[in-house]
Length: 255
Length: 255
Image (cartoon, rainbow over all chains, first blue to last red; front, side):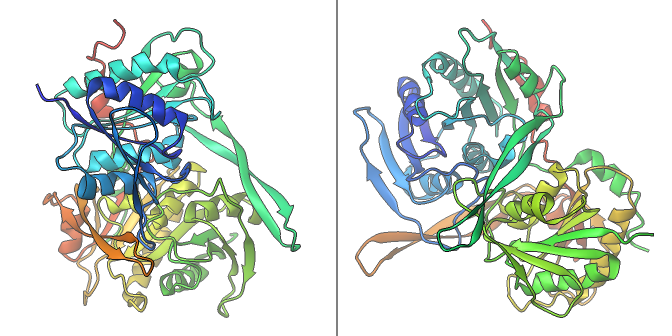
């Protein structure tokens, strides 16, 4: 049987250790092409580059068998560019990550990692975004690798179309409790702006803040991560709120 | 009764004619504060600025009663900054637009206009993104205004929480057929990359392409827009694919 073609990307940039860990695992499973941003793209959401130019550069970063390119754009740009300009056939899977930091709960909306997975889904390609709840550049991705391999193989074997998965690993854990299928927890960021003065005397701001979880339900990803489970949330890019459709049909719109 | 406090933003930038049209309507309905990007932010999706600084500037662009600020960031940044640093109370409504161009179907994912509305929703603020299917800077927004007013008043009067609406207006129409509640049509962009050579001899690319609608259903927004209706799609920022939850529970994950 022909090896599956796997497109690998991320949002922390092509040199990130989390990406190297993901490449290591994917090299065991398939033929690997890496198309990743040339610089960190965290918090880029589903941004695409339409008012600026894109550059593409062939890269050789380690001694693995994978082929690699860097792109001067966002994670969603990387997926689009890979499909249209680099790959000679449709990939069997797109994986993104392993992200240095959480993409659970509402973070999926801000996440460059997950935007790459969603972009692949829109293009009809199965995809998985992987994230570790540790923002350190030297985070330990090793304990994740056997689970990344397991989930990836199950996803490849699955017959359903347009599967997009958001996988998060808790950090600082000796042994994961297991893998849990979850829904996105309700939550938001309690933002703060740190005001400073530039050398020229101009006020400027840094966005900071902390995540507020509003959801204690055992089916939510936040509960499962707090309880040392690896979480999988299946993702939809149909953003229609079906429950609100019925509500709106009662509005007197056309008289 | 106290006038509702309305936060107005967009993704085409603070000087865009579509924003001016939206401000005109909102000044009839409430107390208006504009916090909009200082430069065009189309295609920014739900990007937020976390690796760079933000500047905020008080603006006076026309003679209306509204208060205005520009932000050196994305539409989602504008909403976050407005709530934390500018407004002295939670706004009753956030409106974004009127966008120069379509945000129907999958465009909602790439849209800066809609990311502002979604960000407000996450913060527990009712919101509406308005878009006209005309990319011209001098597009005619006048025919939209009475419908923008009507939909805004209905949204303010509605008692439900966290309502986020995606409203699109067909263009080049003498008279709209009416307003139709829809779901997001299935579709994607058939991207193309226009390869060019820089003065220094380096290859670079521009993203271009055309939208492919994969959905002829009469409940979809694409069908309604093609048939000259104004469309309203209610938006959810819970991206869980509930139908795939059941599928995944059949996977042999923990043995």
